[in-house]
Length: 177
Picture 1 (cartoon, rainbow, N blue to C red):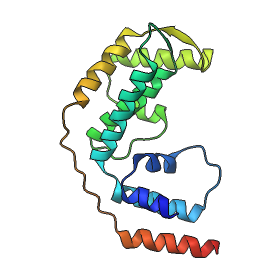
Picture 2 (cartoon, rainbow, N blue to C red):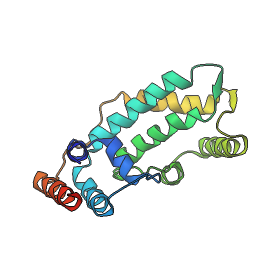
Picture 3 (spheres, rainbow, N blue to C red):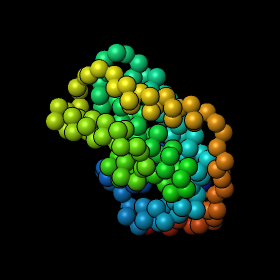
Picture 4 (cartoon, rainbow, N blue to C red):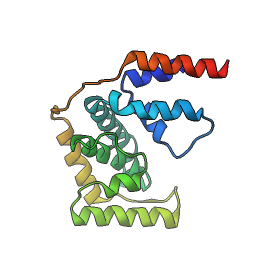
């Protein structure tokens, strides 16, 4: 619990994503509800943008360099790039689910069609399908990466109250004692 509170205090995007994840193994409903309510107070657009931009850059280097690529890996790069755009548009915490993120993204028609086709192909063929590099997607990714190098004018302000986090941690521990 202390680690989770510390991560939220540090505006850790991974923790914020976990709180929105559709996959849940075990949770204390009361604590999770309280943490989710605190997220907007602790969310840092600047830190989130940097996190997603770095993730996209790393995944692109690691997965999409060959002439033949595992098609699902495009989503490992597209999701964080769309999350960067979401944050830069001032929409707050990006949704965890790709479909929601895509629906809230403004993309030109050919790019959107390419992504939709890739989604359909992934659903039909499964997770392991390889295919040739997708030039339109690569061009978009490279353009977004170049744009990501420009320092953003985003706030890093977090308005969360440490006492509120401490109180939640105390209440959670006492409930479980």
